[in-house]
Amino acid sequence: MSSEPLNLSVHSLPDPSQVNGAQQRSGRLRMLLVLAACAAPVIASYFTFYVIKPQGRAYGELIVPTVDLPAQLSLRDLAGQPVSVESLKGQWLLTLVQNADCNKACEDLLFMQRQLREMMGKERDKVDKLLLIADDAPLRPELQQALTTGIPVTILRAPRAQLEAFLKAGAGQGLNDHLFIIDPMGRWMWRSPVQPDPSKVKSDLSRLLKTNAGWDKPGR
Image 1 (cartoon, helix red, strand yellow):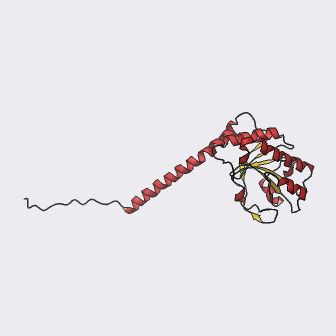
Image 2 (cartoon, rainbow, N blue to C red):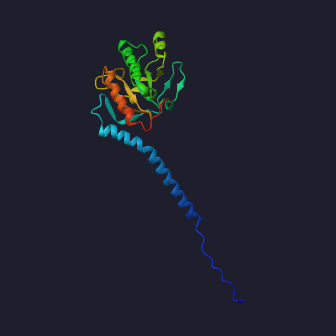
Image 3 (cartoon, rainbow, N blue to C red):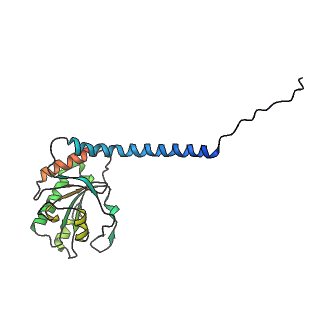
């Protein structure tokens, strides 16, 4: 047996700080890839609708860039209780801004709003009806009953100044002259002409739902 001493080779160990740094960079990269994968359908759908514009021009006016629901929008229900802005997200919103007295033109728009949702057929569960009341006057009992019969309209109050800072009317018009569409991410993106044609509005809305089919969901 050899009497020579046994030589042991000692190799340097990796620096723990370098290992942790590499793991953190790898984790961040994976997170960015996941976020990119989630955002891709949204980016593609908006590119398709705004840039490629399938099936001709939109009937209404597309809002570019879109406008986010203001986090500070002071929403209240008819009982005066505060309502979170976040609660409005997750659905396409057919939105009207009116006064509580609701004249004949207002009633016509409310009828069109109800009709339009039903015209969407199997896609209608992706769409909610929203009425934003810009004053503190009481609703007529018969109007409130009509709005809450069947699939109810979501009725909320908000200060007119805040609504006018969020939604914009066309030149020479008021907010009460238009139907607005807010997407499921809480972005105002479309405005109707005055006295809108329901069939043409439906065409625009159908295209919007089709181009965004990868990320909106039925039901709330």
